[in-house]
Length: 157
Image 1 (cartoon, helix red, strand yellow):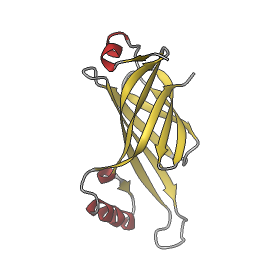
Image 2 (tube, helix red, strand yellow):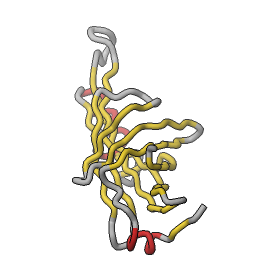
Image 3 (cartoon, one colour):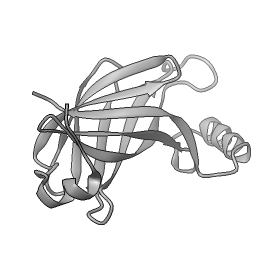
């Protein structure tokens, strides 16, 4: 295996865009894998996953040319609850995650490794009860993000 520093990678690296990738999210002892397509316009298309199934998902990505840092945000929307059952009933909520990592060239393929964060202050819920819950969560975190774990992004061959 050959590892190339990010500064050397910036000089000769193929573009990250217009390619399929496999995203592995590692949170505590759990992990899930999701297929992503990083478009050259900076958008992210979210594909098949073995994690919780969202009803909608999208994102944005960028690679900072100065230091080779990779940044991506993916927002997944879920639906839960039961219509006419319980206090909350049926509702939707969105979970935005931020991914920040370092781009590497491993054996001729591009890979990214880094940390994954929950964007606590931007969680969007559609019911009054859920917005009260988020206000409670935000009061217990001093920053706007919460560290969740690590991620790996590899070319999907």
